Image (cartoon, rainbow, N blue to C red; front, top):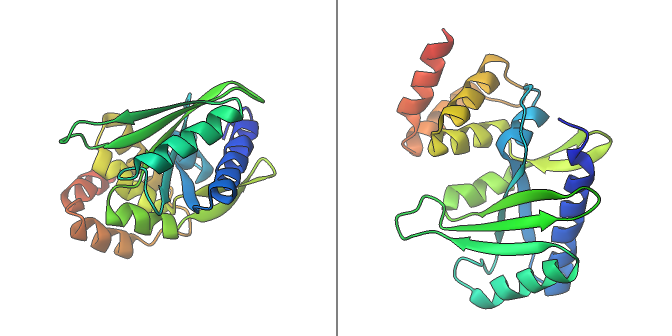
Length: 195
């Protein structure tokens, strides 16, 4: 993982932990996207930070919490913009968060909108990256999210994780979960391409 992301990841962790305490609403979050793939040992270039987050209440249905969280973040020098998808959008709610310091970066925070996304957050793993502890989705859950997204880079990431699997990855469990989530065919295609 690129060193330049470590200060921003630390800032994001402090922001979400601070928001949880200040607003008295626990917010769970974990790294997803290219940085999560890198954290699991795959060399991967990326320009942004992607997180999956969840809370109760969720900003998906609670506009008051959405405003409170945005105010909290903006009072700490961030830019915060909620992006609401159309009814058929695969991403119904995204928080685009601009973190000005220590390094100006943008983070996209996808709010969990499916039960299995929330379950995935309960399996998050703490990894040490550049002397910094970060929450990262378990490799099986990360693969499932990337299969669901289904973009070309997502599928390349899946194949990279499968070709050099971290010890935490249980392929039998991954296959079962993929079938349950109707992602089994996509997983099998990736596995066939690796043969």
